[in-house]
Image (cartoon, rainbow over the protein chains, first blue to last red):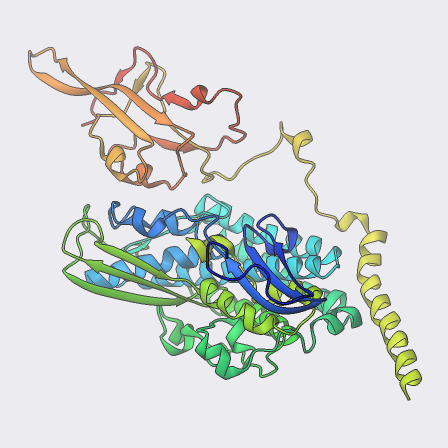
Length: 373
Length: 158
Protein backbone atom coordinates (compact mmCIF):
# COMPACT_ATOMS: atom_id res chain seq x y z
CA UNK A 1 0.00 0.00 0.00
CA UNK A 2 1.27 3.42 -0.85
CA UNK A 3 0.84 6.64 1.02
CA UNK A 4 -2.59 7.40 -0.40
CA UNK A 5 -3.91 3.91 0.21
CA UNK A 6 -4.22 2.72 -3.38
CA UNK A 7 -2.78 -0.69 -4.18
CA UNK A 8 0.54 -0.59 -6.04
CA UNK A 9 -0.17 -3.62 -8.20
CA UNK A 10 -3.56 -5.14 -8.71
CA UNK A 11 -3.85 -7.82 -11.35
CA UNK A 12 -1.30 -9.71 -13.31
CA UNK A 13 -0.25 -7.93 -16.47
CA UNK A 14 -1.35 -4.58 -15.13
CA UNK A 15 1.33 -2.08 -14.33
CA UNK A 16 1.69 1.44 -13.05
CA UNK A 17 3.71 4.24 -14.59
CA UNK A 18 4.35 7.74 -13.35
CA UNK A 19 4.00 10.58 -15.83
CA UNK A 20 5.63 13.70 -14.44
CA UNK A 21 6.30 15.70 -12.35
CA UNK A 22 9.05 16.42 -14.87
CA UNK A 23 7.50 15.59 -18.20
CA UNK A 24 7.26 17.87 -21.23
CA UNK A 25 3.58 17.13 -21.91
CA UNK A 26 2.32 17.87 -18.40
CA UNK A 27 3.18 21.60 -18.66
CA UNK A 28 4.46 22.04 -15.16
CA UNK A 29 4.79 19.81 -12.18
CA UNK A 30 1.75 17.60 -12.60
CA UNK A 31 2.32 14.04 -11.46
CA UNK A 32 -0.01 11.45 -12.93
CA UNK A 33 -0.01 7.88 -11.72
CA UNK A 34 -1.40 5.80 -14.55
CA UNK A 35 -2.63 2.20 -14.23
CA UNK A 36 -2.18 0.46 -17.57
CA UNK A 37 -3.34 -2.73 -19.18
CA UNK A 38 -0.98 -3.01 -22.09
CA UNK A 39 -1.44 0.38 -23.74
CA UNK A 40 -4.95 0.96 -22.44
CA UNK A 41 -5.45 3.28 -19.50
CA UNK A 42 -7.46 1.74 -16.64
CA UNK A 43 -7.22 4.51 -14.08
CA UNK A 44 -5.42 7.80 -13.48
CA UNK A 45 -4.60 9.35 -10.14
CA UNK A 46 -3.25 12.90 -10.21
CA UNK A 47 -0.80 13.66 -7.40
CA UNK A 48 -0.78 17.31 -6.44
CA UNK A 49 1.20 19.55 -4.15
CA UNK A 50 4.46 20.00 -6.02
CA UNK A 51 3.90 23.73 -6.47
CA UNK A 52 1.78 24.53 -3.45
CA UNK A 53 2.70 27.99 -2.16
CA UNK A 54 -0.21 28.46 0.25
CA UNK A 55 -1.45 31.62 -1.43
CA UNK A 56 -4.77 31.38 0.45
CA UNK A 57 -3.14 31.21 3.87
CA UNK A 58 -0.59 33.86 2.97
CA UNK A 59 -3.38 36.25 1.98
CA UNK A 60 -4.83 36.12 5.49
CA UNK A 61 -1.91 38.14 6.80
CA UNK A 62 -1.91 40.69 3.96
CA UNK A 63 -4.09 43.77 3.58
CA UNK A 64 -6.92 43.97 1.04
CA UNK A 65 -4.69 45.90 -1.35
CA UNK A 66 -1.70 43.63 -1.01
CA UNK A 67 -3.12 40.14 -1.40
CA UNK A 68 -4.00 40.71 -5.06
CA UNK A 69 -0.44 40.49 -6.39
CA UNK A 70 -0.17 36.83 -5.35
CA UNK A 71 -3.10 35.78 -7.53
CA UNK A 72 -1.07 36.62 -10.64
CA UNK A 73 0.98 33.59 -9.73
CA UNK A 74 -2.00 31.22 -9.66
CA UNK A 75 -3.16 30.96 -13.24
CA UNK A 76 -0.26 32.89 -14.66
CA UNK A 77 -1.72 32.86 -18.18
CA UNK A 78 -4.86 34.72 -17.06
CA UNK A 79 -3.07 36.84 -14.47
CA UNK A 80 -5.07 39.97 -15.17
CA UNK A 81 -8.41 38.15 -14.86
CA UNK A 82 -7.39 36.75 -11.47
CA UNK A 83 -6.47 40.24 -10.26
CA UNK A 84 -9.76 41.54 -11.59
CA UNK A 85 -11.70 38.88 -9.68
CA UNK A 86 -10.04 39.85 -6.39
CA UNK A 87 -10.53 43.56 -7.03
CA UNK A 88 -14.21 42.95 -7.81
CA UNK A 89 -14.70 40.99 -4.59
CA UNK A 90 -13.18 43.76 -2.49
CA UNK A 91 -15.32 46.31 -4.36
CA UNK A 92 -18.38 44.20 -3.59
CA UNK A 93 -17.49 44.31 0.08
CA UNK A 94 -16.95 48.07 0.00
CA UNK A 95 -20.17 48.48 -2.03
CA UNK A 96 -18.48 50.65 -4.62
CA UNK A 97 -18.17 50.21 -8.35
CA UNK A 98 -15.24 50.99 -10.57
CA UNK A 99 -15.73 54.00 -12.88
CA UNK A 100 -16.87 53.18 -16.45
CA UNK A 101 -13.43 53.91 -17.85
CA UNK A 102 -11.78 51.47 -15.45
CA UNK A 103 -14.36 48.81 -16.29
CA UNK A 104 -13.74 49.20 -20.01
CA UNK A 105 -9.97 49.02 -19.53
CA UNK A 106 -10.37 45.92 -17.38
CA UNK A 107 -12.48 44.17 -20.00
CA UNK A 108 -10.02 45.08 -22.75
CA UNK A 109 -7.12 43.72 -20.72
CA UNK A 110 -9.08 40.60 -19.76
CA UNK A 111 -9.91 39.80 -23.36
CA UNK A 112 -6.33 40.44 -24.47
CA UNK A 113 -5.24 38.05 -21.72
CA UNK A 114 -7.75 35.44 -22.87
CA UNK A 115 -6.57 35.81 -26.45
CA UNK A 116 -2.91 35.42 -25.55
CA UNK A 117 -3.69 32.50 -23.27
CA UNK A 118 -5.59 30.68 -26.01
CA UNK A 119 -2.77 31.40 -28.46
CA UNK A 120 -0.24 29.84 -26.14
CA UNK A 121 -2.58 26.88 -25.68
CA UNK A 122 -2.91 26.50 -29.45
CA UNK A 123 0.84 26.42 -29.91
CA UNK A 124 1.39 23.98 -27.06
CA UNK A 125 -1.37 21.66 -28.26
CA UNK A 126 0.34 21.44 -31.60
CA UNK A 127 3.66 20.85 -29.90
CA UNK A 128 2.24 18.07 -27.71
CA UNK A 129 0.73 16.32 -30.72
CA UNK A 130 3.95 16.50 -32.70
CA UNK A 131 3.52 19.67 -34.76
CA UNK A 132 6.35 22.03 -33.88
CA UNK A 133 5.66 24.94 -36.24
CA UNK A 134 2.34 26.12 -34.69
CA UNK A 135 4.22 26.89 -31.50
CA UNK A 136 6.29 29.54 -33.27
CA UNK A 137 3.30 31.04 -35.08
CA UNK A 138 1.34 31.24 -31.82
CA UNK A 139 4.20 32.89 -29.96
CA UNK A 140 4.68 35.41 -32.74
CA UNK A 141 1.19 36.85 -32.21
CA UNK A 142 1.33 36.37 -28.45
CA UNK A 143 4.45 38.50 -28.34
CA UNK A 144 2.51 41.41 -29.85
CA UNK A 145 -0.09 41.15 -27.06
CA UNK A 146 2.64 40.85 -24.46
CA UNK A 147 4.04 44.14 -25.78
CA UNK A 148 0.67 45.83 -25.22
CA UNK A 149 0.73 44.53 -21.65
CA UNK A 150 4.28 45.65 -21.14
CA UNK A 151 3.60 49.14 -22.42
CA UNK A 152 0.48 49.78 -20.33
CA UNK A 153 0.88 47.58 -17.23
CA UNK A 154 4.67 47.51 -17.03
CA UNK A 155 4.94 43.73 -16.92
CA UNK A 156 4.33 40.94 -19.36
CA UNK A 157 2.77 38.23 -17.20
CA UNK A 158 2.36 39.26 -13.57
CA UNK A 159 0.78 42.64 -14.22
CA UNK A 160 -0.93 43.53 -10.91
CA UNK A 161 -2.90 46.12 -12.87
CA UNK A 162 -6.33 45.78 -11.25
CA UNK A 163 -6.61 47.37 -7.83
CA UNK A 164 -9.70 47.77 -5.63
CA UNK A 165 -11.61 50.66 -7.18
CA UNK A 166 -10.31 50.45 -10.72
CA UNK A 167 -6.95 50.06 -12.40
CA UNK A 168 -3.55 51.14 -11.14
CA UNK A 169 -2.90 53.78 -13.77
CA UNK A 170 -4.46 55.01 -16.98
CA UNK A 171 -3.73 53.29 -20.27
CA UNK A 172 -0.68 54.36 -22.20
CA UNK A 173 -1.39 57.11 -24.79
CA UNK A 174 -0.27 54.70 -27.48
CA UNK A 175 -2.61 51.94 -26.25
CA UNK A 176 -5.49 52.33 -28.71
CA UNK A 177 -3.34 52.53 -31.82
CA UNK A 178 -1.27 49.56 -30.77
CA UNK A 179 -4.29 47.40 -29.96
CA UNK A 180 -5.95 48.22 -33.30
CA UNK A 181 -2.72 47.40 -35.08
CA UNK A 182 -2.32 44.09 -33.29
CA UNK A 183 -5.95 43.09 -33.79
CA UNK A 184 -5.59 43.63 -37.53
CA UNK A 185 -2.59 41.30 -37.57
CA UNK A 186 -4.15 38.69 -35.29
CA UNK A 187 -7.31 38.53 -37.38
CA UNK A 188 -5.38 37.94 -40.56
CA UNK A 189 -3.48 35.07 -38.91
CA UNK A 190 -6.55 33.02 -37.92
CA UNK A 191 -6.76 31.62 -41.45
CA UNK A 192 -3.14 30.56 -41.13
CA UNK A 193 -3.88 28.76 -37.86
CA UNK A 194 -6.66 26.82 -39.51
CA UNK A 195 -4.59 25.85 -42.53
CA UNK A 196 -1.62 24.79 -40.45
CA UNK A 197 -3.34 22.62 -37.86
CA UNK A 198 -7.15 22.45 -37.86
CA UNK A 199 -7.63 20.69 -41.18
CA UNK A 200 -4.66 18.37 -40.79
CA UNK A 201 -5.70 14.73 -41.06
CA UNK A 202 -3.12 13.51 -38.55
CA UNK A 203 -4.30 16.08 -36.04
CA UNK A 204 -7.96 15.21 -36.63
CA UNK A 205 -7.35 11.50 -36.20
CA UNK A 206 -5.50 12.06 -32.94
CA UNK A 207 -8.23 14.26 -31.44
CA UNK A 208 -11.60 13.25 -32.93
CA UNK A 209 -13.49 10.91 -30.59
CA UNK A 210 -10.68 11.05 -28.03
CA UNK A 211 -11.44 11.92 -24.41
CA UNK A 212 -15.22 12.05 -24.59
CA UNK A 213 -16.95 13.94 -21.78
CA UNK A 214 -20.74 14.00 -21.66
CA UNK A 215 -22.71 17.03 -20.51
CA UNK A 216 -23.90 15.21 -17.37
CA UNK A 217 -20.34 14.26 -16.43
CA UNK A 218 -19.07 17.76 -17.13
CA UNK A 219 -21.63 19.16 -14.68
CA UNK A 220 -21.06 16.53 -12.01
CA UNK A 221 -17.28 16.95 -12.13
CA UNK A 222 -17.72 20.72 -11.91
CA UNK A 223 -15.99 21.40 -15.23
CA UNK A 224 -16.26 24.96 -16.49
CA UNK A 225 -14.94 27.04 -19.33
CA UNK A 226 -14.21 25.69 -22.80
CA UNK A 227 -13.93 22.15 -21.40
CA UNK A 228 -17.59 22.14 -20.35
CA UNK A 229 -18.83 24.27 -23.23
CA UNK A 230 -17.49 21.69 -25.68
CA UNK A 231 -19.82 19.17 -24.01
CA UNK A 232 -22.83 21.41 -24.53
CA UNK A 233 -22.99 22.98 -21.07
CA UNK A 234 -23.78 26.68 -21.08
CA UNK A 235 -21.57 28.07 -18.33
CA UNK A 236 -20.07 31.36 -19.51
CA UNK A 237 -19.98 33.64 -16.45
CA UNK A 238 -19.73 36.64 -18.74
CA UNK A 239 -23.25 35.82 -19.98
CA UNK A 240 -24.84 34.36 -16.85
CA UNK A 241 -23.47 36.67 -14.16
CA UNK A 242 -22.13 39.71 -16.04
CA UNK A 243 -19.52 41.80 -14.28
CA UNK A 244 -17.73 45.03 -15.24
CA UNK A 245 -20.26 45.73 -17.99
CA UNK A 246 -20.05 42.57 -20.07
CA UNK A 247 -23.85 42.75 -20.38
CA UNK A 248 -23.54 45.84 -22.62
CA UNK A 249 -21.36 44.02 -25.15
CA UNK A 250 -22.37 41.90 -28.12
CA UNK A 251 -20.70 38.52 -28.19
CA UNK A 252 -21.66 34.86 -28.49
CA UNK A 253 -21.16 32.12 -25.99
CA UNK A 254 -19.54 29.30 -27.95
CA UNK A 255 -21.31 26.03 -27.17
CA UNK A 256 -20.62 22.84 -29.10
CA UNK A 257 -21.89 19.36 -28.39
CA UNK A 258 -19.14 17.00 -29.56
CA UNK A 259 -17.55 16.49 -26.14
CA UNK A 260 -14.26 15.17 -27.53
CA UNK A 261 -10.81 16.72 -27.78
CA UNK A 262 -11.44 18.07 -31.27
CA UNK A 263 -14.55 19.95 -30.10
CA UNK A 264 -12.66 21.47 -27.19
CA UNK A 265 -10.09 22.60 -29.71
CA UNK A 266 -12.75 24.15 -31.94
CA UNK A 267 -14.43 25.93 -29.00
CA UNK A 268 -11.18 27.68 -28.11
CA UNK A 269 -10.51 28.62 -31.72
CA UNK A 270 -13.95 30.26 -31.91
CA UNK A 271 -13.49 31.94 -28.53
CA UNK A 272 -10.39 33.69 -29.85
CA UNK A 273 -12.55 35.27 -32.57
CA UNK A 274 -15.13 36.35 -29.99
CA UNK A 275 -12.40 37.97 -27.90
CA UNK A 276 -11.25 39.93 -30.93
CA UNK A 277 -14.88 41.00 -31.53
CA UNK A 278 -15.20 42.26 -27.93
CA UNK A 279 -11.94 44.19 -28.15
CA UNK A 280 -12.98 45.80 -31.45
CA UNK A 281 -16.32 46.91 -29.99
CA UNK A 282 -14.68 48.52 -27.00
CA UNK A 283 -11.39 49.94 -28.24
CA UNK A 284 -12.95 53.04 -29.83
CA UNK A 285 -15.52 53.50 -27.07
CA UNK A 286 -13.44 53.72 -23.90
CA UNK A 287 -15.45 56.20 -21.78
CA UNK A 288 -13.72 59.31 -20.50
CA UNK A 289 -13.36 59.88 -16.78
CA UNK A 290 -11.47 58.54 -13.81
CA UNK A 291 -9.59 55.29 -13.99
CA UNK A 292 -9.86 54.64 -10.26
CA UNK A 293 -12.57 55.24 -7.69
CA UNK A 294 -11.57 56.93 -4.45
CA UNK A 295 -10.86 54.40 -1.71
CA UNK A 296 -9.48 54.81 1.77
CA UNK A 297 -5.79 54.28 2.39
CA UNK A 298 -6.51 51.26 4.62
CA UNK A 299 -9.39 49.21 3.27
CA UNK A 300 -11.58 47.50 5.85
CA UNK A 301 -14.43 45.31 4.69
CA UNK A 302 -17.56 45.03 6.83
CA UNK A 303 -18.23 41.78 8.65
CA UNK A 304 -19.57 39.15 6.31
CA UNK A 305 -18.90 36.90 3.34
CA UNK A 306 -18.29 38.08 -0.20
CA UNK A 307 -18.17 35.98 -3.34
CA UNK A 308 -17.43 36.98 -6.91
CA UNK A 309 -17.03 34.76 -9.93
CA UNK A 310 -15.35 35.60 -13.21
CA UNK A 311 -14.64 33.75 -16.42
CA UNK A 312 -10.92 33.16 -16.89
CA UNK A 313 -9.44 31.62 -20.01
CA UNK A 314 -9.95 28.18 -18.46
CA UNK A 315 -13.27 28.47 -16.70
CA UNK A 316 -14.92 29.84 -13.64
CA UNK A 317 -12.76 31.42 -10.96
CA UNK A 318 -14.52 32.16 -7.70
CA UNK A 319 -13.06 34.36 -4.98
CA UNK A 320 -14.60 33.92 -1.55
CA UNK A 321 -13.64 36.30 1.23
CA UNK A 322 -14.73 36.00 4.85
CA UNK A 323 -14.21 39.25 6.70
CA UNK A 324 -14.29 39.87 10.43
CA UNK A 325 -14.05 43.63 10.01
CA UNK A 326 -10.26 43.84 10.25
CA UNK A 327 -7.82 45.25 7.69
CA UNK A 328 -6.91 41.81 6.39
CA UNK A 329 -9.23 38.96 5.37
CA UNK A 330 -10.20 36.30 7.91
CA UNK A 331 -10.26 33.60 5.25
CA UNK A 332 -9.82 33.51 1.50
CA UNK A 333 -10.81 30.63 -0.75
CA UNK A 334 -10.27 30.42 -4.47
CA UNK A 335 -12.43 28.14 -6.55
CA UNK A 336 -10.00 27.52 -9.37
CA UNK A 337 -11.14 26.18 -12.74
CA UNK A 338 -8.17 23.90 -13.33
CA UNK A 339 -8.66 21.89 -10.16
CA UNK A 340 -12.18 20.90 -11.19
CA UNK A 341 -11.22 20.30 -14.80
CA UNK A 342 -8.35 18.05 -13.72
CA UNK A 343 -10.76 15.89 -11.69
CA UNK A 344 -12.49 14.86 -14.92
CA UNK A 345 -9.22 13.67 -16.49
CA UNK A 346 -9.37 10.13 -15.08
CA UNK A 347 -12.93 9.70 -16.31
CA UNK A 348 -12.12 11.03 -19.78
CA UNK A 349 -8.96 9.01 -20.28
CA UNK A 350 -10.17 5.64 -18.97
CA UNK A 351 -10.22 3.20 -21.86
CA UNK A 352 -8.10 5.42 -24.09
CA UNK A 353 -4.58 4.63 -25.25
CA UNK A 354 -1.60 6.15 -23.47
CA UNK A 355 -0.79 8.30 -26.49
CA UNK A 356 -4.26 9.84 -26.32
CA UNK A 357 -3.62 11.02 -22.78
CA UNK A 358 -1.37 13.74 -24.19
CA UNK A 359 -4.15 14.95 -26.49
CA UNK A 360 -6.70 14.94 -23.66
CA UNK A 361 -4.40 16.81 -21.29
CA UNK A 362 -3.52 19.35 -23.96
CA UNK A 363 -7.16 20.15 -24.74
CA UNK A 364 -8.22 20.50 -21.09
CA UNK A 365 -5.52 23.20 -20.99
CA UNK A 366 -4.21 22.69 -17.49
CA UNK A 367 -2.13 25.24 -15.62
CA UNK A 368 -0.67 23.46 -12.63
CA UNK A 369 0.09 26.46 -10.32
CA UNK A 370 -3.66 27.14 -10.42
CA UNK A 371 -4.43 23.57 -9.32
CA UNK A 372 -2.15 23.74 -6.29
CA UNK A 373 -2.22 27.46 -5.51
CA UNK B 1 -14.10 -1.15 -49.32
CA UNK B 2 -11.46 -1.11 -46.61
CA UNK B 3 -8.73 -0.75 -49.20
CA UNK B 4 -10.55 2.16 -50.82
CA UNK B 5 -10.90 3.97 -47.49
CA UNK B 6 -7.24 3.37 -46.82
CA UNK B 7 -6.14 5.07 -50.00
CA UNK B 8 -8.67 7.88 -49.65
CA UNK B 9 -7.23 8.64 -46.19
CA UNK B 10 -3.70 8.68 -47.55
CA UNK B 11 -4.77 11.00 -50.37
CA UNK B 12 -6.48 13.34 -47.92
CA UNK B 13 -3.56 13.32 -45.50
CA UNK B 14 -1.11 14.26 -48.21
CA UNK B 15 -3.49 17.03 -49.28
CA UNK B 16 -3.80 18.44 -45.76
CA UNK B 17 -0.07 18.14 -45.21
CA UNK B 18 0.59 20.13 -48.37
CA UNK B 19 -1.92 22.73 -47.20
CA UNK B 20 0.03 23.12 -43.97
CA UNK B 21 3.32 23.12 -45.84
CA UNK B 22 2.03 26.00 -47.95
CA UNK B 23 1.94 28.18 -44.82
CA UNK B 24 5.39 27.15 -43.66
CA UNK B 25 6.71 27.38 -47.20
CA UNK B 26 5.50 30.95 -47.44
CA UNK B 27 7.63 31.95 -44.47
CA UNK B 28 10.53 29.92 -45.80
CA UNK B 29 10.52 31.97 -48.99
CA UNK B 30 9.74 35.30 -47.27
CA UNK B 31 12.48 35.76 -44.67
CA UNK B 32 11.53 39.44 -44.25
CA UNK B 33 8.35 38.43 -42.39
CA UNK B 34 10.28 36.72 -39.63
CA UNK B 35 10.04 38.68 -36.41
CA UNK B 36 12.94 37.61 -34.29
CA UNK B 37 14.99 39.74 -31.96
CA UNK B 38 18.57 38.65 -31.69
CA UNK B 39 18.58 39.40 -28.02
CA UNK B 40 22.05 39.31 -26.53
CA UNK B 41 23.49 41.02 -29.60
CA UNK B 42 21.05 43.94 -29.59
CA UNK B 43 21.59 44.67 -25.90
CA UNK B 44 23.06 48.10 -26.56
CA UNK B 45 20.11 49.30 -28.64
CA UNK B 46 17.32 47.52 -26.75
CA UNK B 47 14.79 50.03 -25.44
CA UNK B 48 12.31 49.00 -22.74
CA UNK B 49 8.89 50.66 -22.47
CA UNK B 50 8.82 53.67 -20.16
CA UNK B 51 6.47 51.93 -17.72
CA UNK B 52 8.48 48.72 -17.57
CA UNK B 53 9.01 47.63 -13.97
CA UNK B 54 12.66 46.69 -13.64
CA UNK B 55 13.67 47.70 -10.13
CA UNK B 56 12.88 50.37 -7.55
CA UNK B 57 15.24 53.36 -7.57
CA UNK B 58 15.37 56.65 -5.71
CA UNK B 59 16.21 59.55 -8.02
CA UNK B 60 18.71 62.11 -6.68
CA UNK B 61 19.23 65.57 -8.12
CA UNK B 62 22.59 67.22 -8.84
CA UNK B 63 22.93 68.46 -5.20
CA UNK B 64 22.67 64.85 -3.98
CA UNK B 65 19.18 65.46 -2.61
CA UNK B 66 16.27 63.03 -2.67
CA UNK B 67 12.55 63.40 -1.91
CA UNK B 68 12.14 60.64 0.71
CA UNK B 69 10.78 61.90 4.03
CA UNK B 70 10.92 58.52 5.77
CA UNK B 71 7.15 58.23 6.21
CA UNK B 72 7.37 54.44 5.61
CA UNK B 73 4.21 54.34 3.47
CA UNK B 74 6.04 52.17 0.95
CA UNK B 75 7.20 49.79 3.66
CA UNK B 76 3.58 49.29 4.75
CA UNK B 77 2.35 48.97 1.17
CA UNK B 78 4.91 46.31 0.26
CA UNK B 79 3.33 42.85 0.39
CA UNK B 80 6.43 40.84 1.23
CA UNK B 81 8.84 43.01 3.17
CA UNK B 82 11.09 44.05 0.32
CA UNK B 83 11.64 47.54 1.71
CA UNK B 84 13.10 48.34 5.12
CA UNK B 85 13.52 51.96 6.16
CA UNK B 86 15.74 52.87 9.08
CA UNK B 87 14.99 56.37 10.34
CA UNK B 88 16.92 58.77 12.54
CA UNK B 89 16.14 62.01 14.36
CA UNK B 90 17.85 64.91 12.66
CA UNK B 91 18.51 68.22 14.39
CA UNK B 92 16.99 71.12 12.46
CA UNK B 93 18.65 74.60 12.36
CA UNK B 94 15.87 75.97 14.57
CA UNK B 95 16.67 73.44 17.27
CA UNK B 96 13.73 71.09 16.57
CA UNK B 97 14.18 67.41 15.85
CA UNK B 98 12.79 65.93 12.66
CA UNK B 99 12.42 62.37 11.36
CA UNK B 100 14.66 61.59 8.39
CA UNK B 101 15.84 58.47 6.65
CA UNK B 102 19.13 56.90 7.59
CA UNK B 103 19.12 53.96 5.18
CA UNK B 104 16.54 52.87 2.64
CA UNK B 105 17.16 49.13 2.21
CA UNK B 106 15.70 47.48 -0.85
CA UNK B 107 15.89 43.71 -1.38
CA UNK B 108 15.82 43.15 -5.11
CA UNK B 109 15.80 39.38 -4.59
CA UNK B 110 12.42 39.59 -2.82
CA UNK B 111 10.78 42.20 -5.02
CA UNK B 112 7.83 41.07 -7.14
CA UNK B 113 7.61 44.34 -9.12
CA UNK B 114 4.00 44.91 -8.07
CA UNK B 115 4.44 48.71 -8.09
CA UNK B 116 2.49 49.13 -4.83
CA UNK B 117 5.29 51.11 -3.16
CA UNK B 118 5.50 53.60 -6.00
CA UNK B 119 1.75 54.28 -5.96
CA UNK B 120 1.78 54.54 -2.15
CA UNK B 121 4.56 57.12 -1.98
CA UNK B 122 3.08 60.56 -1.20
CA UNK B 123 6.15 62.54 -2.27
CA UNK B 124 7.20 60.69 -5.47
CA UNK B 125 10.51 59.74 -3.91
CA UNK B 126 10.84 56.34 -5.58
CA UNK B 127 10.11 55.11 -9.06
CA UNK B 128 10.56 52.07 -11.24
CA UNK B 129 13.69 51.92 -13.38
CA UNK B 130 13.72 50.21 -16.77
CA UNK B 131 16.73 48.04 -16.05
CA UNK B 132 16.87 44.34 -16.74
CA UNK B 133 19.36 41.46 -16.42
CA UNK B 134 19.57 41.49 -12.63
CA UNK B 135 21.38 38.19 -12.16
CA UNK B 136 24.58 38.26 -10.12
CA UNK B 137 26.90 35.60 -8.75
CA UNK B 138 26.59 36.69 -5.12
CA UNK B 139 23.13 37.29 -3.67
CA UNK B 140 24.44 39.85 -1.20
CA UNK B 141 24.78 42.25 -4.13
CA UNK B 142 20.98 42.21 -4.50
CA UNK B 143 20.47 43.95 -1.18
CA UNK B 144 20.65 47.60 -2.14
CA UNK B 145 20.69 50.88 -0.25
CA UNK B 146 18.76 53.36 -2.34
CA UNK B 147 19.69 56.67 -0.73
CA UNK B 148 23.15 57.80 -1.83
CA UNK B 149 25.77 58.33 0.89
CA UNK B 150 25.66 61.85 2.28
CA UNK B 151 22.37 62.67 0.60
CA UNK B 152 19.70 64.71 2.30
CA UNK B 153 16.06 65.65 1.89
CA UNK B 154 15.19 68.08 -0.89
CA UNK B 155 13.92 71.39 0.40
CA UNK B 156 10.21 71.97 0.26
CA UNK B 157 9.29 68.27 0.42
CA UNK B 158 7.15 67.47 3.43
